[in-house]
Length: 323
Image (cartoon, rainbow, N blue to C red; front, side, top):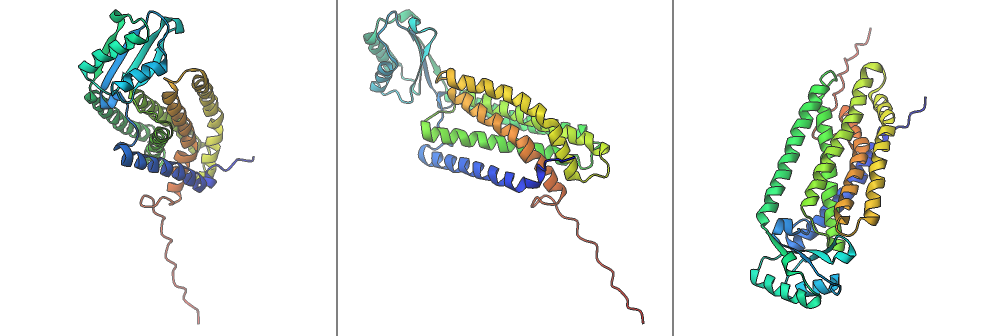
């Protein structure tokens, strides 16, 4: 039976991933040189204020509201219409916390259209909230790394060299995290998109998705090893990938179609989050087949520098000539 050789082309997969990651790292480096951070940070991380207000009639447009905040020296303003168009409700996020300026902004907004003063709500966000969220996300990734490695080693204890499966799954996960961070930096440079708390949600979702998809393939490899005794390891791995490919694609395509629909019709407010999540899940699907599995084969064949070592050939015995 013909079996497509996925793992035989693993060097090509490594090169593709390396190019994408390097582009992301370069984008993060450019962003650091310009603004001091790998990607533009929203007020969830740098602190600021959220304005929620409602006009009682038409007249206030997004551009007009933005001009009011700009005239009062409020940087990085994000303006979003809330509810139905006839509700005249707005949510504005801006990176400043000046009480005196807040009162001036209220007065200037009232000049645009009749403003329901009782509906105006201003909430300040401390930069420490974002720092705490970042620490919690990093801690969650570290805990997930430890738990996944321990689970795979325990579940795959009947498979020779079970620790390799855990390490390869973690390397694939880190591959996806780097790509997500890189795309956030690229989008920040091109479109000025900022990273907010939803970005951390996207990262954690991608981590869980990537590991789960990798474990599905690894589990089939574990099942096929005793069934296919005598077959080369590469052949067993290829069979396992093909046997799980339809399941992975069916699950992923459903999620991708939904995210594409949200990207097209969901509005500007969710577009950065959905874009990052879409790229991350696409990377997770790719890495489970074209990174994690090939890494196993490379390790088995001694092709990973600094990790795997080829078994040295046995020394040949000198031949004694007969006289």
